[in-house]
Amino acid sequence: MGDLLLWVMLFVLAFAGMEFVAWFTHRYIMHGFLWCLHRSHHSERHGLFELNDLFAVFFALPSVVLIYNGLNGHAFQLALGLGIAAYGLVYFMFHDGLVHRRFPVPFSRRQHFWKKRIQAHRMHHAVETKEGAVSFGFLITRPVERLKRELANRRRS
Ligand SMILES: [Zn+2]
Ligand SMILES: [Zn+2]
Image 1 (cartoon, rainbow, N blue to C red):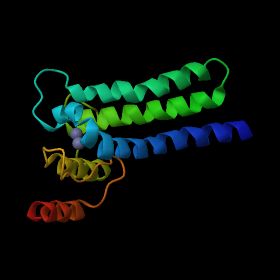
Image 2 (image 1 turned 135 degrees about the vertical axis):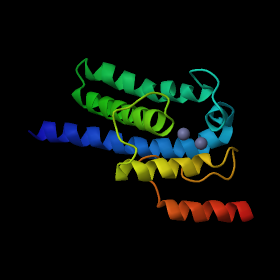
Image 3 (image 1 turned 90 degrees about the vertical axis):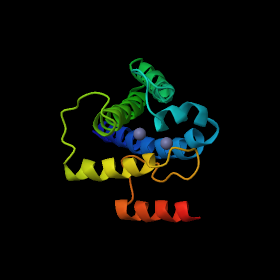
Image 4 (image 1 turned 180 degrees about the vertical axis):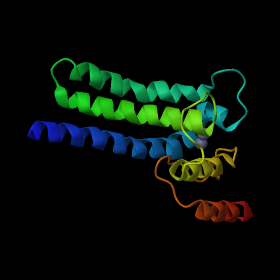
């Protein structure tokens, strides 16, 4: 029973930790030295894929390794690997499906929880340059009104 609890805790920790990793990567790396890849996500897409999709592959790698080890006798690594994969799936479904409408998803855009996140992410996309963007997180966001004010302040300065 103790093992199961620990397993679930590690899964949740990996899932929640990925929101931080995603925020940090987006804030300091994608809008930093790898802007050359992320820029494609801040401009109009031509075709099915964008260079920015490479980040999904990059994020999937540790998950694949952990799941592989998990299936080969290290149960706790499976928890971490599946936690990362679950976050990736949620990010893909909602960021790419629900927000950017790259494919249909069976969820409503009007649902309060997602509506807030969609609005916050739209605020992020209000800026098409490397500098000056707001709202880098995805699941954890600040109120849209605050983001709007922050964006307006940045434009003025
Ligand atoms: Zn961005
Ligand atoms: Zn986006």
